[in-house]
Length: 103
Image (cartoon, rainbow, N blue to C red; front, side, top):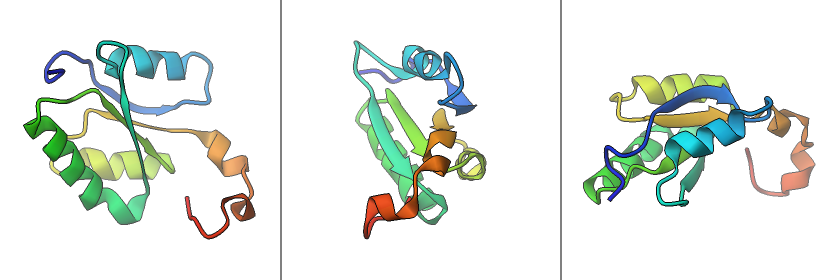
């Protein structure tokens, strides 16, 4: 169980030098990490997923948000989120690259 064995990592652009490595070092456990992608429409669902993981004793996750505002929303939604970041690289990818999917 990773609960209580990983460090918080909140609010950083993973495309900045060294930030991805910092996030992985803080949030991984036994060389594993659970990565979840979310946007502002799924803040409640993401919070629920994190609570479910915690109930299972797992805290080695990192939420990859679509932008900094989503991490801010997650931080205020019950204060259970201890791992959230975003990547400005996603801003440079044309929407058409994802077809019917939305980021």
